[in-house]
Every structure is written in structure tokens, then in C-alpha cells.
Amino acid sequence: MEKATVNLTNWQLYVYKDRYSLAGQCDYHPVLGKNSYVAQTTSLVHYDYDEAKKVLLYETENTLYLCPLKYLSPYPYRNVIAEYKMELTRLYCDGATILDKIISTMARISIGLDIEEGWHKEEYKKFESCKKNVFMQDLEYLIAQGQEELKEREKQRHEQLIAEAKKYEDCIYIEIAQLEHGDLLAYHIGPRTGVLKPHFHSGMFQDSVYYVEEFELNGKHEYVDFRYFPRGFGLADTYRWSDNIKQAVLKNGTEGAICFNDVKIMMGETAVLKPKPKNIPVG
Image 1: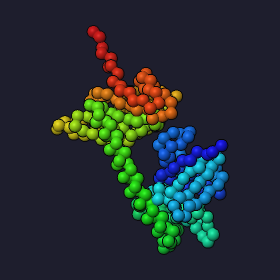
Image 2: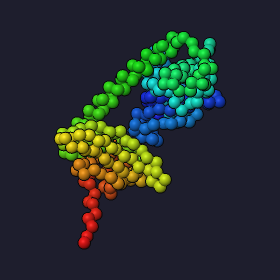
Image 3: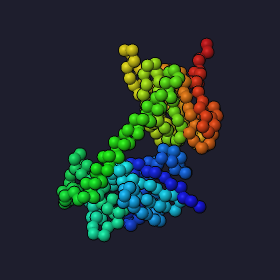
Image 4: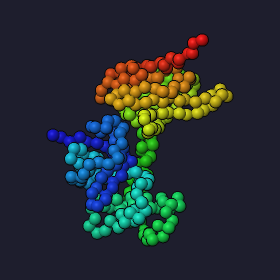
């Protein structure tokens, strides 16, 4: 059986007690879907390195991850304690594998960022800095190049979403790939357009996804506010919908049907939803 191939961006490589793992943003994952995030892969079974293309090939039991060095996270190991970062820097030595070279170098980059920002001052008094080697210089150049590419890719994506939203009046537009955690939302309210990233709230009884932005329009204070409860199994219901949003345009980019506010949307279809009628008190 052929393994699924997954492209990673803003990725990080970890090691603990000789066990390696990956984390990063996926273009598509066979289990998690489009634009998903893998927090920790299963155990490494094989790796290879394409020197010409500067791409690490990282293979687990079920998946082959393609990891271009230029798409390494520019802010690595924020969740790793200072003492262990210093320990990781010592992995770079004669005969070190490409995995250990990457980890060691990214740990040095992380420590440098911490020092610039004034973090862990006491711990880093024990850290003996050294000159950047050629590998570190090359890696920093590649990462800077990769971040510029990703910014341009994001800009083009935002323009595409806004173009779709502008086909409708006073709307929000979402191409749904990650119903449980949210996707980018484009809005077109009057003459105003923009793109919002989803926020995820983990509640005691119910998780929620929400989008909020405030702005000035015609001298008045306005805001876009769209929130929903993901119910699981492709189901979702809104619980807040600002009055200036007259319609929600939802395109189903998942690999199955979804049901949003009791409206069934088949794979690849686009549905236009109106806000739920508000309960008007009688008497």
C-alpha cells in the first residue's frame, strides 16, 4: 500500500530520549484533512535528505512527510525549556546526522531569539555561544526566503477569498476544510472587505470557533462577529451573528457532507445561509 505524501510548512523537528517526531502545518493530511496541523507524528521509521533540493524526507509507518528546510519554523522550540535547548545544541558534531544538525541549529536559533527578547536570562548565563557555522548561515538564509514565499502565498490566498466574498453583498465567505477548528473567513460588509483568522475556544461544556473584527465605517463604529459551535460529525450551529452580516456563504471543501444551521451542504457545494430569526417577545 502506497503511503500518503504530506507537504509541511512552518515545521519543527523534535527529539527526546532518542525518539524523533515532527510537528507542522500540512497542505493535506489523509486523516486530518486540508490545511491541518500535526502536533506530533508517530514514530520515525526512515528518513532521507535531498541535498540538491534541501528537502528532508521523513517517513512514519503510514505517511511520508516532505519537509523543505526553507519552510522550517522561524520561531522554533517556544515550548522547550531553556536547559534542554542548551543540551540540544551539543548534538551538532562530526558525523552528526541531518536530523541532529537541524535540531541543534534550530535550538541555537531559538536561544538567540530568547536572548534578544530577554527570556531565561539566568539559565543562559551558562550558555557558551559560538560563531555561526556554514550550515547555520545557510539555514537562516533559507528560512528567511521561505517566509517571504509563504507571505506571498498567504497574500494571494486572501485576495482569492475576498474576490469570492465580493460576489455577494454584506456577507461572510468561508471555504470549509476544518469545521472543528475553523478556516479563514473573508467578509464584504458595505465597501469594507477583509480576511479573519479563526479563534478556537475550548469550553467546559462546548468548544466554539469565532471571528471578530472592529472597524470604522462611514464614521461609525462597526464590527464583524460570527461564531459557531462545532458539534462533531460534520455538524455546526451559529450562536452569534452580527446584524451587518446579511448572509453567510459557505463552500464545503471537506471530503463529505456537512450540516451547518440544519442546512446540508454536499462536498464541493456552496450554500448561502441567512441569519436565524430572532425570538421576538409576545405581549
